[in-house]
Image (cartoon, rainbow, N blue to C red; front, side):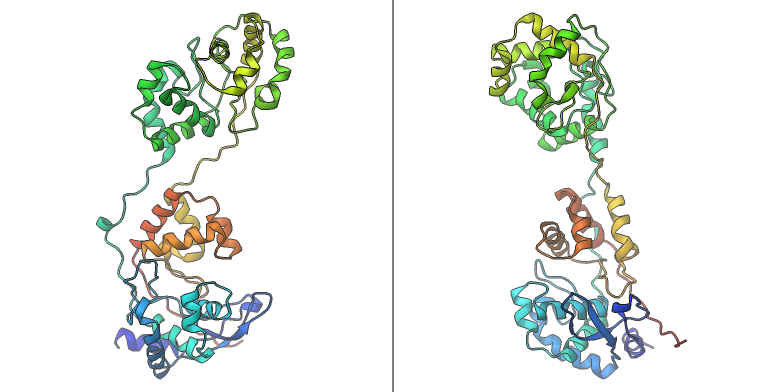
Length: 407
């Protein structure tokens, strides 16, 4: 029996999805209209070979964008061939009712009957899905930013410590600094806000991506107190530090990503930095105004106090790798993007540009779905690109629906 005939036979054997009861033993389903609360009251829809043939005639209105074969050649328009029929039907209904906003789709399906929506969904579901995109046509996999940051920071260990905790007097510890602050600080050497020719020459070759990776790597390292001696008076420094707490936090642990934590920092470095702000070789208005009244003894006391405090790591979460994101996506969308839940779309071999567009829409809230909003909220641009490339390369597979006898 040919594949198309087999599929038509299977479609004729489909049973209902009782979504309101939370059960989904079958596949293609039909609904009157969406409920006011967003639920669907679904009932059985048996699609025979003639029904699918009628669906093909309805699909002539869809072919300009999606193609009669359901394989899109239009940027930003999805492949629909081989997609789960219940999902296709539900989303067509969502466009028709305005629950999913898209003017061209709304205009196309506006006057289609519920029966026509079912049949066109059955038709496109019956087609062979798009082939996976060749690896040569997809962007390279995104490297782990922490691993890349560690590699880029290899030359920094001689001064700042292999793990970012300084053992050299006068050199700052970098471990546990918020990445937003550290990126700005590193760029400050390049643009001249911080005067240090050696640091400028070392940082200048790095790209913005390199600096972000380095900062992320150091932010995730365990911070520790620098071991160099601090000649100042800690008690006097504690009293003087009261004026600094608003920006740098109690005990020198900052709660503002833009301001560095000072707890555990090398005392000689802190003293030199404060004198640089006071003398103008570091140009930052609020810091200059804060340190101008300080004499050398007070600066040494402040440095001694902060050097003795226990540092704490910033609230920075290691980003998920592409493989970790894929594991999360596959929980709903099936292994390699081949969904086994009729209500959830298959992702395998989907267009890269469409996948990219949709994830951005969920992340921005332009598409409304509480689960997808939570999943996409922390995706970076690199995450989206990597996920789109991954699923475009996956081989799509048909999902066989099995009817069960009534109990």
